[in-house]
Amino acid sequence: MKHIALGITGASGAIYGLRLAQELLAAGVRVTVLITSAGFILLEEECGLRWRGDAAVVTGHLQAYFTAPAGMLAYHDEKDFTAPLASGSSFPDALVVCPCTMGTVARIAHGVSGTLLERAADVALKEGRPLLLVPRETPLSVLHLENLLHLSRLGVRIVPAMPAFYHHPTTLDDLVNFVVGKVLDQLGIAHDLFARWGNP
Figure (tube, rainbow, N blue to C red):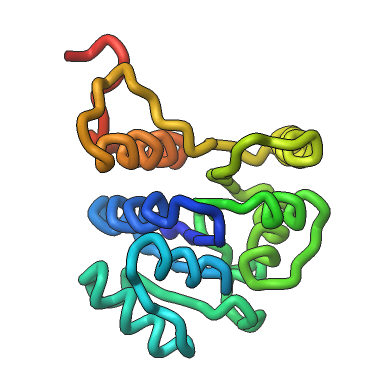
């Protein structure tokens, strides 16, 4: 069974992370969620989800929201450096940060591990495990581009939150699904979230 860690940071686009978690769980993937302090703010601001609290409270909110089967969904506080994700000996199959702030990009690019999410990214890099970032920012500064390039050269997959329009989206869900589908493609997880180019 695949195990994916999902980080949600304070970049606009919290819905991308929520939809990705839904799709992973629906595909039978075990998901460990990491939410930064700014990520909680965005979840409330953009999605109306007031999930802040200790680990037990947040876990309860996640279980209620996703109605995940027992053992398929876990959560760790950003300061919990005793969590399995902090060690390469029990790291998941991949780490996805969706959405990812440019501050998070910068700290990962320079090995700064001030939170569990940043430590998990550092572990992914040192262990050669798949690391996917879904940055959501515009415009991009030279610093942003240099940090993304540096990470790309280290093997990090950069999947910007840039929805396409060739599949003729008619709803916000269509746009969100396109980006999430692109992330699932990188993880090797089958989906039918959007019509592929050349297909009816």
